[in-house]
Image (cartoon, rainbow, N blue to C red; front, top):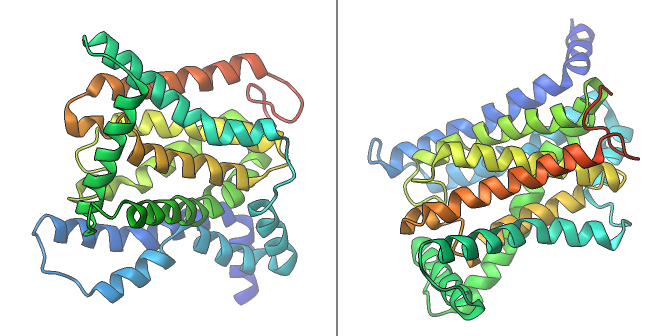
Length: 297
């Protein structure tokens, strides 16, 4: 019975991973959303913090890999997380795609609505966003260095906890079954839905954000991440940098929080430009070395 169950897990490790990812995080997220809306009393903070750590894609990936592929599998999985020997072009792309798209979207939206765009105005708006986020998480907004240090830490830890599952575990297995484009699309949709409870959690970055915008943006990002991985010997470190740049941009640039200020044009321009970049990769890359977005694996 035990070996039959183990063999079943090995044959269905990807589905087991997806089930664990939702089973470990959604209960905590739903409780947090319900509390933020005043539906239930304040739950024990310690319990929520423990669930927040264990309810991550990285933990789910570690558990499934340990059970199904043991030491060799864990070594291969961890190796993807820290694979840094890649060309500088891919490092720059990983760090720069999202911030550059956000800046262009903000500049176009400002000019289209009759405003003016300057670098000084961008930094001023970004600093105000940083102060607002500090107040929201209970920090003193005047202590800029403390806020920025926490933001940098978040921009590193959150991507590791997520990319350790989505990209380090799921993408290689999906690409064994289908092509890179479909793999990126599938993970993009699942990744988006996984965040759904936070859209109902007051005080979260996603509260009040249009889910359709988020879905379109995340799917485009997911396709681009697969493209980068397949050009860097499956380096998940590059997707961690990509993810970190998104978090930094969301707090330092005015574009991602545009839904809070009414500048919805900047928001949709960001999504549209990212989709255009992803589409360009699909059309221009085709069957290039290291990636095949248009044909079966």
